[in-house]
Length: 246
Image (cartoon, rainbow, N blue to C red; front, side, top):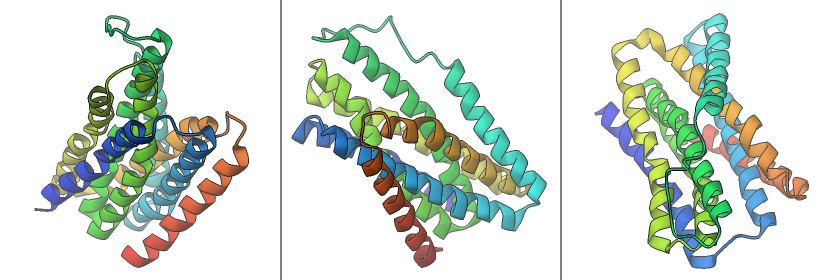
């Protein structure tokens, strides 16, 4: 039952990318100020849940050495995947008014799909450790996935893709999460000794995404202050929720 709940929570969180795609369909391209603020908010949410949630729980269940190793391996794994994954797929074709926007959409889709794998693993492993922590993490990831869905759908809309298609692309990018959650929940359920390392691994992977992707992107359009305010708001929100739910 715990594994099923973890997968369902991760599915709900993953499908928040659909909401992001729907926002693009309803209101078109977001103002860059708003987009950067949302990215900063997502970065604050991810930082809080990685540190006060995943890594703290790992420290309570394992040794400092295991946690340090898990965080390092998690960050290193994301670095390796990020460098090794082919982010462009030239064999795909679409009658598009802007091929550059289409290629950018494909790159963002590949990146977001990749980054959703550790998020799903995090929900699965954290729910196995403490259901309230898994629930909190799923809420955090759902908030984070809305701007991700916007990021995927935006370039596809700009190149002339119909709404139902770019919403589908945004949706698919989030579906790796429940699959990864299933793997993570089953693994730590049957091999409990993996739990501290798995929690730390997920925390390290999240910190990598925040530092390598979310913060640089949110600070690259001239709205650094708005992104920082969003970061602090997201961090405070998740810190408050962690006191209520965990």
